[in-house]
Amino acid sequence: MKKITDDVIYIGTDHLDIDLFESQYRVPQGVSYNSYLILDEKIAIMDTADVRKGEEWEANLRKALGERRPDYLVVHHLEPDHSSMIARVLEIYPDIQIVTGVRSVKMLQQFFDTPDIAGRCITMKEGDVLDLGKHKLHFYAAPMVHWPEVMVSFDEYDGALYSADGFGKFGALSECGFYSSEDPDWSEEARRYYINIVGKYGAQVQNLLKKAATLPIKSIRPLHGPMINEDLGKYIKLYDTWSSYAPESKGIMIAVASIYGGTIQVAEKLKELLESKGAENVFIRDLCRTDISRNVSDAFRYEKLVLAASSYDGGVFTPMHNFLHLLQIKCYTGRTVGIIENGSWAPSAARVMNEMLSQMSNLTIVEPTVTIMSRMKSTDYPALEQLADALL
Image (cartoon, rainbow, N blue to C red):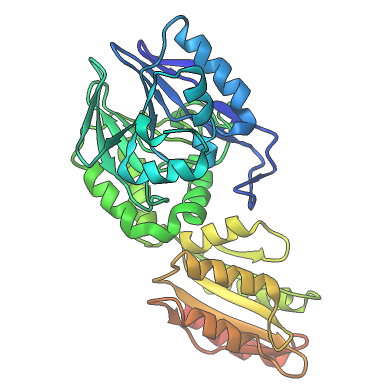
């Protein structure tokens, strides 16, 4: 629990012993489940928390409330890491009303077997206002950022945007700091969070940014990660870049899926050639041994990508297939891509990589495609040099 202003209290929790977020993303620094309490003439709880931290969240809520009782539970997003405690809140505060979007009401009934839960809802549409006294919350629809029912709210009194999963990041607040200004690595984990979780919905994020641009925002209060109170333009610009699918940085990522090390040797030679020709920020990622969510994030970050993979079962080695599948569903676009394949009797990796890339939009596939037979030899150097020249 932490006081943000005289009448806004943070009641969220850190989850430090979680192994995987959404059962798929590694979170070595944990994750936070952010929740806020506005104490005004009317009292509003702003979202709840994951049930695995439910007891701690409830204790924070009770301590912040003291003898007072809440009037409203505002539900911006129904994903279980933010909504699991709704039934408990209705149980301990039977007079409370749920304030949420129209699309949330049906979904509430899917998640909770609570009698007449729909009858306890106040539904908000675009532009509707919840008047708490000094604090007046204006609601805006944010469909598919990153669920269809999502709404955000803007408190006109203190200029706070309650942004749901927008502007969130991995990392518990005890590890990365309560405010973004305390977190020098904000963009690293925020980018990984955005690209892997929200990244498919860039157009919808752009729509939300257009709405946000009309508001006098002084603070962004997300459902994960630090609050943003300074340099808002910097963070909004990053979100604009990510959601428009534009490269954020210059650089060449060489993504390698190698079975016995031969393909990695080819990648190392290409890196050497590129750097000798003046290329900057060239780096290799071993897809077999590095975190796939970080690999996907960095593929979006940089302007150029080289795929180097072994052939396998008449196709492409599985780690590369998985990597390209994730790039496709996250809408990878607008990049320059080079291809290297390795095979011992019937090279097939390039064919499959090209087929998968063809399902993505606006990619420039440079020539030549380099084919290595089992192990790189000096006779392969000219083709690698041509590929390096084409990537510059």
